[in-house]
Image (tube, rainbow, N blue to C red; front, side, top):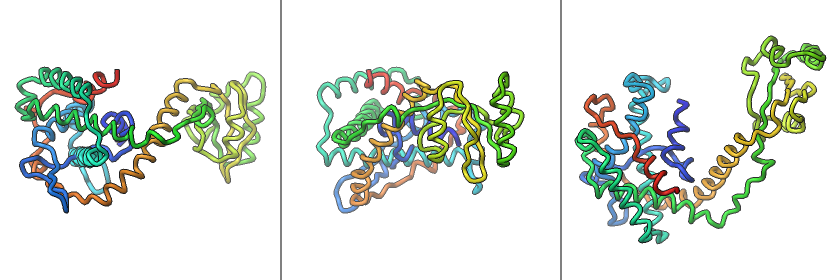
Length: 326
């Protein structure tokens, strides 16, 4: 579903964005173990339910309770099953990242601990009785979850601090175009002649003849052929391209905005995140391969997102962003 990327961005904000989304390890009572070590890993029932409640309420507020039974693939997987598996995956990743942080000697500073304690107090005090009943989470568990989330963010930053992350304006540049797409080259030449005639409304012409009904879009580097990009990125605002051929496909493009400032800044941040994450994954994946972990999942079979008596909290991670990214 289209919310998958949004879900990932929201939970693994900063530079955790492209990790594997949501997930979990099990509870401390029924606790997970790490093979060949004496170290136990996992999350308490309260911590699991806090993350579950946050995401459950976020989706329910937008889509209502009807979303849980919606099938998301051809195998008949419901959105409830999908979401719970994503939460499991996220928390498993979070725990593994903290094991790696331990190995790297990454600890909370006194200042970080103070800020996280204040954040914990603020968040915990905001929980209603219904929230506390549904999650069963304790204040110390909230602090621990915030601490691990913060250490995971620091881990990515510190392990990639020496990586060249420079993204050029040219690489990130996004332009806005109107586009006519046709598969008949002779017809495309005729349409191009019309498009170049004084007084022709290009958008009206595109809506009338284009085989692709989406006539206006952003274009970034790396999306289409070099031939297409070389022509389109050379256009100035208001200019119309010649017929561009990609195999049997023909394009006639009018540049609407030859440098979309907001979209370019957005893309630059996405490219930065991707590059940083790729560098991080090289180290992280090697660590995971050498750290076999067994997780128990006893709590997951007891969770129902359809519970009408569930909590209403939705801002566990938002409060972190507000408090720690100032």
